[in-house]
Length: 239
Image (cartoon, rainbow, N blue to C red; front, side, top):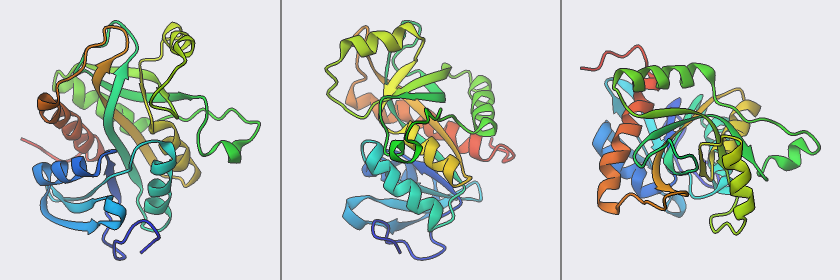
């Protein structure tokens, strides 16, 4: 047990899916896993471990923002032996070719600041995804004919951003979308020799101001969870 995770030793799988919302972790576990056990409830940050086609998986909330995710990613890797961490979350599109419900695979992350900045100091570390996970997710998306985009994303440390000039710079340089956690996940995973990937569903669009209705979010997010599981276990035959 750690300060933030109450799971017993051995209760966390080596593969962990990390939605921001703990209730989304419960939804995903109920929908995709069998033999599900709730392994963490500390501070309401729910975590569940179960089986997906015989493969052991934990789905654990990360909270909102990089500081919160950093806590859980560090403890999951350092104290529970997690080796593969996949963020499954929503994002806001920043390019015209990306549509609501599309999926973005974060190859690399642009940031203004992250919790790891104090470690890197003068170094501009470039957080990037694990290539094998990225490649596997892309191949699965192509086979499923899912609308997928691969590239650089922006991990923001604020939700209510009042810097339209900053967004314009991101858009000019081809940044695909904005979210709030992936860059720190990639940095923590690199530090501890773990694998990481962020798979994001576009729920909002910064250019068109479209937004996915809440009634449709679960159905749209299901594709993302399926993609994450198949990427984590590419050798599992799924009918």
